[in-house]
Picture 1 (spheres, rainbow, N blue to C red):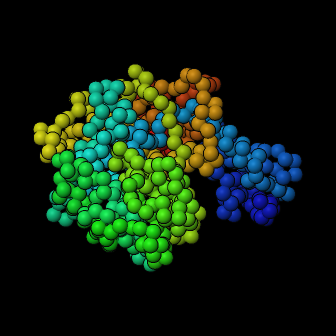
Picture 2 (picture 1 turned 90 degrees about the vertical axis):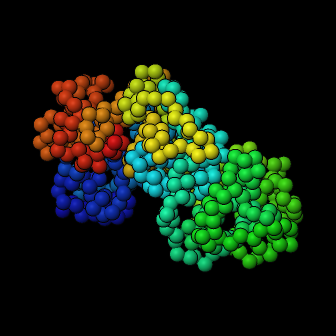
Picture 3 (picture 1 turned 135 degrees about the vertical axis):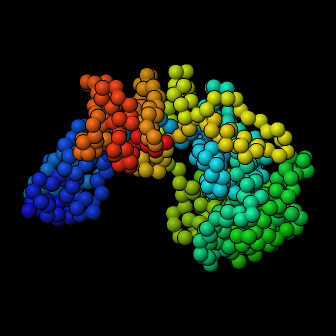
Length: 517
């Protein structure tokens, strides 16, 4: 057996195995998008580049056989730069949004398209679970949020935006009104405690997500009842007091302790800092004593990092109006959720990075001829308004309104190799962009598969699979040179090309170009 070195580790490999295959036999990770062991190459993504230590030359590890005496480097600055370049070249032709514009615009970063899909199917409890991953008070914010997400909705190019906030409200109300409301799983207790100053949107959201992680929260607030700035909406008749009380009650049920009508001066602040493992300042800008807390204070409020919410004291975090006043309560709510990530990382002794933010492919405004492609996944008809605004949308109206969503997101958000590697190597999507781009196309001619050729990187994996399983038509390379595309030959429908192995093809597609509907 040939003996080679990979990152100074000796590896004995069978004859004929590629360098990439040899590395994987030893548990050494070399990234790849197009590679399938033992299969011929149609193209090379060039992500699997490695370096010959003796010559300094780079080569694709998937297409070079392991030969005795090789000494391979899988990671150094030059290798990583070559992989980044390869990813940027692939991204230059990849036309698709990872996250929909509505989700990007939402200050809480909620997965709106997934909520819409579930509501359109009548899966209300499942939709609520998606909402509460990012919005701790959906019934409240379904009533008061000014809906910046709707301003970014592509459906506006057809008629009017999807009524996202009313749909979110229905999901929240469905929980509150249900005989057996859904309750999230809670992690075992960690023995760690956090003092939260302020029971407004930021403090409530932080408490919700920290309690779910097993940490004990004690909330201190100067008002008689929790809610903070949300009480303005109650007093104006926009938000029913009962709705606010019931959603706060869910946070209380998770174990959060509320201490109302408590002014936190410098003395109590010092005591809380000593008694708890971390402290979050989430009180409004007018709170007394903030200047006496020994923190760096700026013109707007407490000085805190915009990503991690850390302050000048290692145990103290600050979010919401404590940092910067906002007219939209959804912003401090989202910041409270994000601060919970940082506090959890701090309590676990991890590097404080805040909420994970992945690479996001974006291609901009839909062209006129592309709007019809997106409407293939939607239904005609203008925005549905409730018969009674106080009651909101009915069950039937919710299902119909959710079905108006054009599904501008990618269904392969977590498993897309192109996205994950672009994030890891900090790829710049626009590095090799040209003024012209591929048009968005959606082929929906299959019971459960959708094909978007504008996302395809022509890796050929689907071609391999359909050949292996002897599909009658299968998938094939069509055209020549730079104009080559992958499709079903002879103009046949997608259902003909993927008659037998659709599920496997969807599973192995590395970009979400072929995905479940």
